Image (cartoon, rainbow, N blue to C red):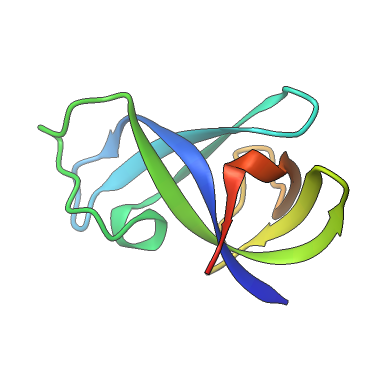
Length: 99
């Protein structure tokens, strides 16, 4: 597995209890939107607070599983999953940065 970060859009504050929860969305390789709600330190190194303007671009940690042309299969790090329970997605290569 290779460490990558994947493009996401912070949509809004999901919880103000410490350390705070953030809702982000990602768009997969076929254009379907997926939402994640997770603690801020799991999703980003930015110091997002309830006052942080939204929407804003964020890059979240993942592992690259495979590359198929312009599509990249990823698995989220730290047990992160989408609201529908997906731990892996296939994204457009433009939405993935290799570390």
